[in-house]
Amino acid sequence: MDRLSPGIPQNELPGLQPPPGVVSNFTNPGGYQPTIIGTLTACLTIATTFTAVRLYNKAFLVKSIALED
Image 1 (cartoon, rainbow, N blue to C red):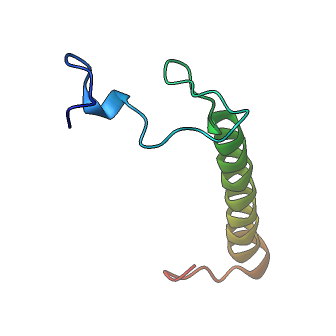
Image 2 (cartoon, rainbow, N blue to C red):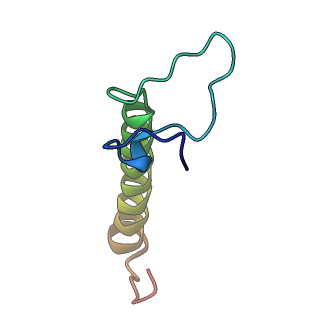
């Protein structure tokens, strides 16, 4: 504990030294947010489309829609 700098919160310090050739970036870390948003948007669009097509088929083509649909 004596090696810690006073005045710096422990949650802003690295747990270990980074591997050789890697620089820690705590102020602007990279992330996967755009990839996650794109993937979730695509999955939600596909799921909504298939659900809408299924409900349309049951309601207008088969004409027997039930609660479980």
